[in-house]
Image (cartoon, rainbow, N blue to C red):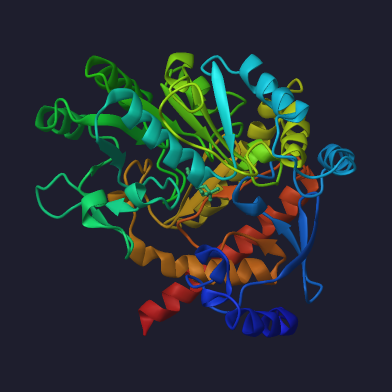
Length: 439
Ligand SMILES: Cc1ncc(COP(=O)(O)O)c(C=O)c1O
């Protein structure tokens, strides 16, 4: 049995300090049960917890660590920057360096603004889209997550109503009424929505690779249709690439699908493991932001030099030849090997992947493109799987709705060890379920 004494004690203490003992809800292990592990160290693909247990990590801090933990170039760059002070509240050379690196290597970005989180990035693009178009309504898609700002914590309304309802307490109805929630992968829903509100929609925001509620890979045609409809009706198209940006490839999903959104949001990888978000796109739109234009947006620590240095070091590594082809091939092979095994066993199981993101689902659907395709009941398999994987030294994010990430640091040998652990743990999950059903 996994030794968890220290993590359990620390969690008991944390519960008196933070709501639910955590500073972000999904860390709390609510979906899988038990105390979360307190991680004390990471290096390469591995992490260690307070009890000294060692794991191969497939959570990678929920996506930022595309080079793995404690990468040498990123560490060096952070240490060099820190020696000159940590923040000045003035422009710095580090901001210019990271911005140029990104803009020079991304076809669809003409100008960028740095913020400190993905939430700040998406929230700011909504204000910008509203300021630019002079319209109020925004459209989001069911199954996509865009951070925790009020207008985006909205879910589909009931029945035929297109207007959303708040998905969190504390979001005023006046806000949720301005957010329309549509199903993914449904061209008719887009047509109907535009017909209902022809002159009111400022923007449509979508994760082009929805990766927050399973991995709901969209068809290119659907995204192209969205682009076309937005252009026809003066609606700004925002790609939220907080996960997919610099992950699916340097140009993210925009580059992979070859679709130019009006604005793109970033987070996670862009900061090399430090808190950075950004949004950018067409220059003409970006000039609407203060101090050039009337849309206000600011931040004391925006473009922080230490965080910029970390981001620059990480993205320079990503730009090296074959970085993405090697990482993506490694991921495809990992998924293929596990799927070959589960197919042979006849398990009701699939694994989906794009770039170096993967997701496992207890289903027989070849494609899952909308959140309505996910059977939330099947998450009970995940709970058993998660526990069995921890016992075998494999760390996955503690929810079956979350995706996993593979980093450059995951070696072939580590992936082979992980494959064996996945196969054994899946056997346990299916055997446990069979026993329960036989009762
Ligand atoms: C697609 C997407 N957008 C926005 C966010 C919010 O980013 P942050 O947690 O940095 O505020 C997330 C976070 O997971 C995300 O996955």
